[in-house]
Length: 321
Image (cartoon, rainbow, N blue to C red; front, side, top):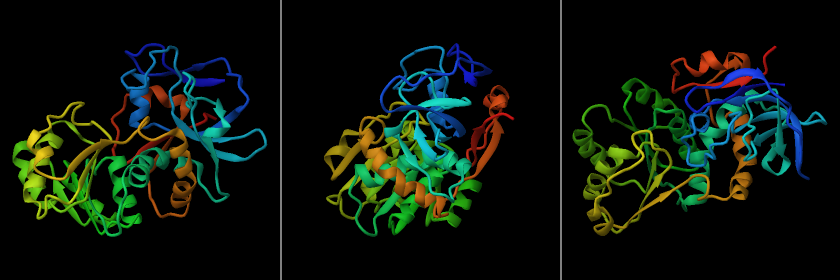
């Protein structure tokens, strides 16, 4: 088979011939891969920087996708924990980590949307108890996952969605998909934090894809402006685009009913993720959540990997003709 293969964490994958993997366990099966998305998580997998990396090489990246089973059925799948992922003509999957697709599902759209959507979807359904009419701040709302989070929060009953990000033009576009308030984070983070605090003072939940300095600086202003500091504010750390570490003011934890949790692999069980997939797939397939996939043949992986990308689009690789 042909695959995108990483042989050094210092360089991206190359398209080359690779031995076809074989199922080796009871629930495994070899499938034809129809579509797989190039998510930020895939890039960190390919350079060995993700916290789940095992440093095993050679590596075929790709953490999920849509494939065809030997009997012809289409499934969405999460790749196994081996070094042989989804960026290939074929992949061995664990059937327990796959979900059948409805007949009207678009494989490319599912491959593009599931990964950026599942972070906020699983967070709001598994990591926190949302109340009807909850209010949410999304830090990093202009990225692909952040844009999905805006839509998902509204779909799950949020009465107010505050979208924060650096790109003013993209922020403006988020009002069409559910953002009620936008806050531009461009400029000096210390100057931005008070404005963000005033705008987001009454939220119940913060979904944070940024972390780093913007998160640490925003916590006290949000709590300071809050009308009732005894009302719980849950800050959920998902991504770290702005830095892996954040300085947490001790006063934030003492002066308010404030908790910081994370959401990701490990904080939610695999079974918990799998239980959410069918409903999420239906929401995507039914047009309740929108994505912007851009399709490339897998043979172009090297050129696409090194090209500038648009955070409002999601690259999806399909088999080369």
